[in-house]
Image (cartoon, rainbow over all chains, first blue to last red; front, side, top):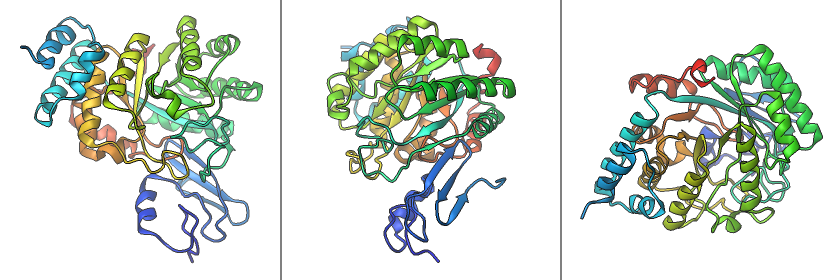
Length: 61
Length: 331
């Protein structure tokens, strides 16, 4: 379930944020809206919530 | 009376001498119906004075966020309410990023840190990171760590960093509107030390910070007077939470005019497509830029935002019959 937008941290899903996320990594945890630690590398990104763990675009991780 | 493009054809294309500030301004003010001719001339200049090769680079953030400076465009400033949190990249991940960059055929890998200038912890991380990359990956290592002392410049040379990036960001007259925690002159001072050290100088900026067209011309002329090896051209990608977060993106035709003008100001430099090109120009604009004076690209992601897949740029270069500059050609 997506409680919070992973771009702006507000409740729900927002079309402008979904569009912007094509060229941005997530910044907020969708479960608890905490700001995540995000590491962008040339081929992907990894975002970590201290409570809910890691999400990543890197398939090999 | 000859047009600015007729004048540039003789001065820039035939003689290899860049336009002055007045000439650059004329190019930036060309009407839409002359834009294609300006891009064509800029392309001819690039082909004559730089050749068909395109330099490919990947960049990575070694230390993200928490910066004490207030560059108004930057989501990594700790002074704004940006969602970007502070994080460090570990050495194994840094080496892996270099390896993946090299796998694209890139000859350049730039390590970037969001700092005013490096402290001893960051310099040690650089020492360890550059050594590890050089042992494992065949690629040139560049760095971008903010303002440097002479001792730090010397240390980077000793590490084998071959190019140093330090953007002036915008022209001298507009800089105080964009940054208040340090001066344009402080940046210039670091650039002079870098040049004197023998490292290659990489210095560019961001188009669309709210500067006037006249200030855009001033910026290109100031860059030309520095004579940098490389000029990265960014276009503002307004970041949430920053003072420039609501500024509109540059109009595509203005972005293309800027590319042509910067090439006609600096016929021999490596003119690199950097951040913001995706949202400003899209896929078609990337092609137009590469056929309008650009001869280098950052492939893959940027520091805090994402770019086109490297394969999309590499396929475009192949289609345009523009070979990727080999590592051996840069040594």
